Every structure is written in C-alpha cells, then in structure tokens.
Image (spheres, rainbow, N blue to C red):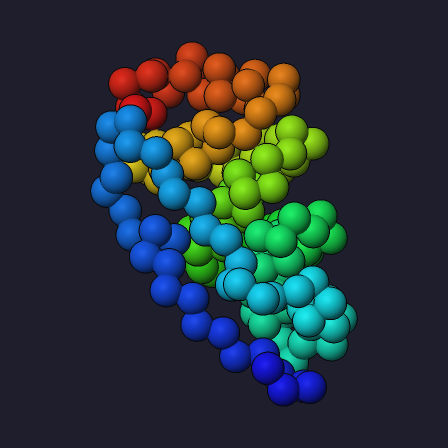
Length: 154
C-alpha cells in the first residue's frame, strides 16, 4: 500500500463460487493478516472511486468496523442494478463475520431483494447468516423457512 493507493488481491473462491449444498458450514473470510483499520479508513473519504471505497469498506467490516459495514451497505443500495450479486454477497458475508444482531434490518432488506428463480442465492444467504446470534436474526431465519421452505434452504 502506498500513501494514495490500495492494491489488494484476496483469493476468496467462496465469495464468487456457488453450489455448496447440504449442511456443510460456510467458511467465513477474514481480513488479511496485519491489515489495520487505520490503513483503510482514509479510503472511505478519499478513494479514487466508489468501488475502491466499497472494497475498503468490506475489509473494514471484516475487521469488525461498523462504519465500514454501513458504507458497504450504502454502496450495495446505490448499485443494486449493476453487480448486485457481488456486493450483496459481500454485505451479508460481512454481517456474518461481525455476528451482530443489530445488522438484521440490512439482512432483511437483502432477503426482500431476492426474486423468483434465485433459490440458490437465497440458500447461500441463509447458510451464511445461520451462525449469527440474536433474537432478530433468528426471527428472520424463521421467516425465511416459513416463506421459502426449509428444504430449499438446506
């Protein structure tokens, strides 16, 4: 990392790969070793473009930073039509890493955005957030099972 740029390559096939079924646990990513929030925070305000800021936000969220999560959610909302799946998956994965029940309204918003024919993606979403603890997220998962059916989510 130079003073004015961020170059990052994270081999994370789970972020882009699909097709995991059954009760296999989703392996959640972690931020690269040695990465510190203070290295990323400048990119939230002074990034050369919105995409760079969103990637920095994702990494901040993986480090447990709520401001990073909120900025990532903002980017997802602004880009729902383009690259929605990528940002959506990064957002709910970050929520799962943070394991914070207060993020459930964003997870509910993601769930509401799934349309017909996206059962595979909904299954990945459900399996990723399954480890989050809290009353609100438990209610969201219960709602998903009731509306979609448990067999589609396993």
